[in-house]
Image (cartoon, rainbow, N blue to C red; front, side, top):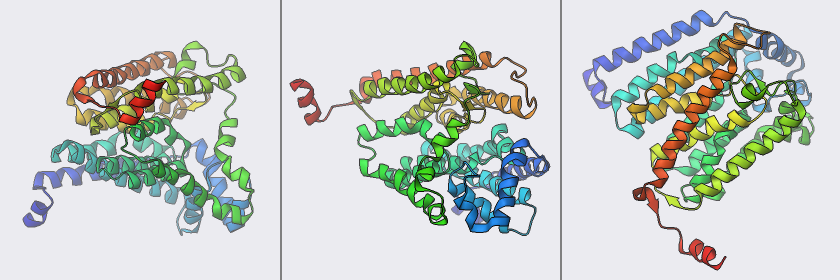
Length: 401
């Protein structure tokens, strides 16, 4: 046993911690597995029942508004000889543990600290927005978050092609993966990611919809399925996520602000990307996390129709951010508190538009986090030690202009 542990850089205390935290994480999820939420009753259970009745032909219908890849998973669950909700929640809870292991390995990779890596594994398992998402709410966000974690791990490994493959897999499951897409553009500008690597995104998405297309659902419907999702959320500018619309008024100028807000965030992102592309920088692991976290908070803060779960990417990135810089220990505490408050506003006060603390207060808290991580990026870029000379070809083009 001792030789086995030593080969893996572990001691008995490490093994004890991992075992206990695994049991605690499992215990939380076992307790919550019996909770039945409206999302299960309105969506997943009827979809699985229809799949059992219709089989492969269900893919040809328009009864589902998630990408077909998720429906393939429901098809597998429908074939299991167990209660569908147990199978559904069980799968996503298993992925919680997989993601925790990936996070721990990622933290070890970027910090060089075995202790931080092991600590991160246990921390991930007890983060409220993680176990509430899979075990309590019966949501599926852990799927695309696991792929995003793999994307970051392989970016830190300096294997951009594989990293972009996993990013493409995240996009196949959830449109919210695009929240952090701008930081990949910065990596491309700084030649850390090749343009050809971005092809994984459309290629994987197209491959994922082929079975549903073969089943009979029109190709354009499948291509536009993310657009159809957004069209259903026109009844509120912010669907229980604390952002700018909770400050200026969530129920006013619904159609106008919904369209204008989308163009607004695109304009803000273009300005930021243009400014950041003017110089080249040393792309450190910490800078990668700073950029991704910044965009993970910025995008849903301005984008309309954001759901209460859409801070989940920022939740995970905030943990990595704090593990890389212990002075930022408060960051994941505040970010996860904001997210979990939004969760519980839906789960505990169903039908109410107000959580215990007004959404506008949390929106200002989220804005404060955005400013703090933005300042970190600003100071990094202003530091001459982090700046690299521009390519001669780019310099000549600027001089000619």
